[in-house]
Length: 352
Image 1 (cartoon, rainbow, N blue to C red):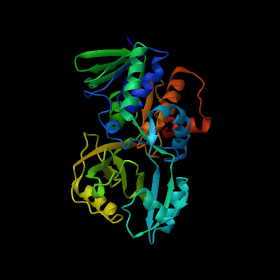
Image 2: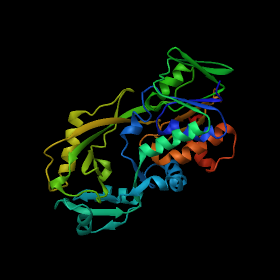
Image 3: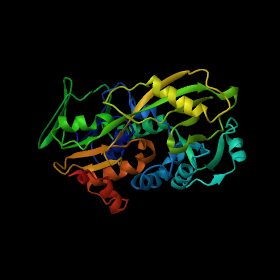
Image 4: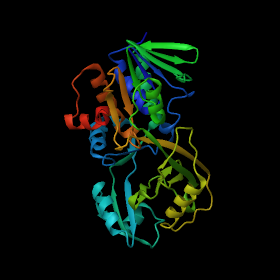
């Protein structure tokens, strides 16, 4: 028997398991054959401290020092066109991104075209080595005597003083259960006899295109249109372009919608001098949100042995260090390192 079973091998689950494993015997179960298969493996992999709602920003800031070994410089550039001034100013203010001249913006991204009238930039945005972070957390679980089990899809759950988790023909038991199942978090809750909180998966599509004009894009920042209508990010000599879509879907192994992707590429193309002539590959991931788009972290009000670790949306990696520590503190009865208002904002009790 374990002390705690964690369901879900994305960044949320593996970081929570690592934090908990320092104080308890932990078993992490993941249905896929590898960790980080779904949303975590399809992340834009960016740390931007000012990205998200207030509770997310608190977690971002509390995570910053932990992230340092996993970060490399990227930078953040916001661009706007005529008629978009109000939206541009709102986005720049939210992201705490100082305005720069369009000429300076072109020193960062030379392919910006003459329709660009406003630009804002800051250097404090970073790429995250997401695979290394996941694997390091998994190594921590194992080093602390815990188990990381892939290919273990949960098929049944029951509670009678302890949780019984069936994964095919294998049965696991533990007094406490952490639900870090991402897009499937509500399904796991229903299976466990717990009232779901309304976790809703949203598809986010991505296309990989050749570097515009064969340029070296390695030092370009990630760059966004206003209202996050699209964004582009350098990646291994190519450019990732997303329509920043957020279509509500059922939990599944996501793929890109061709029409949505084409619309996003067109929006991107309206801002640059080089037309998109070829898509090298495309994919999609599921960003899962609670109804208020805030993470759900903590003990379920109906059954305190059922712990939510869900609703990370697009903030999973950048919040993971602090979110996992908070989850462990709550679960183990330790004093949390974040303020009470943030704890309450994240608590599943807010849906009761």
